[in-house]
Image (cartoon, rainbow, N blue to C red; front, side):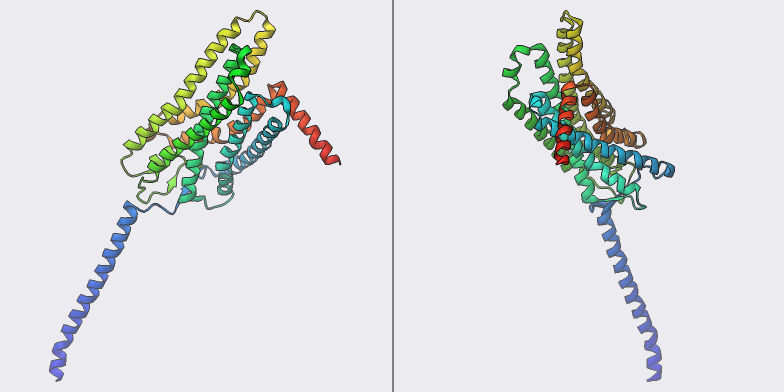
Length: 349
């Protein structure tokens, strides 16, 4: 019996070793399968937004600049919205468009700046996958909406200067509402297409975005898959929603310039140009960075340059817009004075 036990012991050890190897192999296969599934299909739970992490000395000054700019953008745009809604002298189509532009700029900055401030003020510079998706969806919705809204404002200036006698008939309230609705719905349609294509991109475990916030070109750049369809779709949509409104704006101002040059008095020419200069400055501030960002293929997109240009048109432009319209427009300045006087009287009671 002892000899039989001695002979069976190696067999038991052999089968025990074989079984343990089988279990270990099965676990490794299961883990590999899980990793491969995560690699190929599952999106990351969060993204890391680098911002200026590679330049730590920039974080505090940039935090202060962003915070001040955000406060100024909120105050300036809210003031223009209140003045446009409460002052009877600003109930013309031009100021209807301006109030929508100010509301859009409020949303634009709120979509990105609070997240940037949180990341700069903490060691964890992350954003959840869902938060990132919502951010670039809303960001591109608002950006496209602003393109069309600026074109509608150029149309309003064209009718006001080139067809002044027919202005009230042509630019009636219903048309203004339709143009505003077209801008918001077109922006939503553009964003919807971009989101549907972008959420299908695999990232292969890549989580680091060299940007201050999430936007479509940066997401395409991060993907590990073939992005030819995304590149082509982005190029077509940008051509339609950026270049077509820009062409209409330039065409409108071509007719405006021809009409203004026909005015005999220098005072009349100065007044006509003055009503358009604010809009032209806003168009330049918005379109020049956007054209640089989106008219190049995302595959050749430079994230280092792109993130600072994105920062410019996501916070600097919305901050400057209220001041451009306020400083160069007597009607808006007068309405803001009356609004401040009304607030002062209410606070004094």
